[in-house]
Each structure stands twice: as structure tokens, then as C-alpha cells.
Image 1 (cartoon, rainbow, N blue to C red):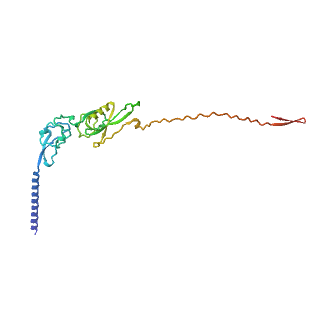
Image 2: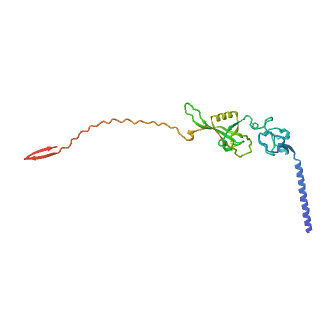
Length: 279
């Protein structure tokens, strides 16, 4: 009886093992039948503005159903192309990450179409303590003396002149992967031609400050600026009219009747004669 149970268990184990082997064989054959294409990927981290060469790239098998749009299958097709964004190792290179054909390497390849790059001098305070890094967005505030209007005195004003400006580079570095603050003496901004003129005028008439903003916040807020009197809450002094007191009427002297003093009389008797003396 025991032998029969042992034999049954052995047969059952053989059947389970055979079924697993058949399933594994079928799974492997199905995987081998998945269609794949060659896709060019980076073998090293490539910084934006860099010129691509064959040593930076290789091809790997990529499932046909998930090939990235705009990808390449030939390494030679990417020779001397310039990347306008940073590419990580193992990441597929696509046309959208590359500058147009014939673009030279450097910062000029990173500037968007219709934009300009302009550099402004900053210090630790103006540069937001070094947190204005490439890839971040800032607002530009100018502090200057406002022109006289209609004979009024010029007033000092601070006003936001540019909003949501992309920082292309700090000093000579344009890499956007570093998050460590860097205190530098110059920051390069990406601007439209009109905004470039505003910034050039602003830095000539006053002092500039950069205001760091949220990267996904694109809302623009129009402000009228603020003056020193508004900052400290000074109110205009309204002259108070002074009413002159009415002239006092001349006092009319009142004649007072002179009261006669009361007279005292004394009766004087002398030698059987009487006399009345009053005084």
C-alpha cells in the first residue's frame, strides 16, 4: 500500500514538472517571436549644447510596439548633431531633443526659435543666493527714479518689468541637472527681442533684482509698482483752513453814579445851647 502511494506521488511530480517545462518552452518561443527594432541610445550622459559623436551612442533592440516617435536606427545619422536638452545614459535620442541640422554646438543651440539670450550682472542677493539655476524661471524687478511729471518731484519706484523668464546659464555653465546653488557674477536669460530691449533699458536706469518663481507657474500679474510713500503708508497732508476769530466788540464804558458817602452827625451841647455838626 505504501509503495502504491509513493509511486502515485512520483508520477504526479513527473506530470507537474513536464507541464511546467512545456509552459516555459512555449513562453520562451513566444518571447523570441516579439518583433523588435534597433534604436539609438546614449551610452554616456550628454549635456545640453554638446555635439554628438559615435562614441556616445549605441543601438539596442526595442519592441516594435513601443518605439519612441522620432527615434533613430542608425548611429551615423546622428553624427555631429547637437542636443538641446540633457540626455541620460540609456535614453533614446529623438529628433525633438536635437537642434536643427547644421547648428553649431554651445549655448546658441539651446535658445528657442524667436528668442534671444541676454546676460545681466548679478551678485549673491540679486541672483537669489545662487538658486537661479539653468532651467529655472525668474521675474525681473527694477528699482529706479521715476521721471518728473507735470512739475512734480521724481519718486523712487520698484516695479516688475519681466515675468516668467527662463534662465539659460549661470556664468559659463548651462547644465540643468545640478540643483546645488551657485553664487555667480552673471546670469544669462532667454528673452524675446522686445523683452531684451526692456531689460537693457531697465539695467541702465536702475538696479535689477531677480525673483525666483515656481517652474510650473506661468500666470502673469500686472502691477503698477510701489513707491516709497506707498511702502511706508504716508498719506497726503490735507491743509486745514483756519477760521480767524471774530474781532471783539469795543467795550462801552458804563458811567457809574458816584454814591455819596453816608454822613454822620453829632449833637454838640455847649453853655445851654445845642448845635448839630455833620461830617
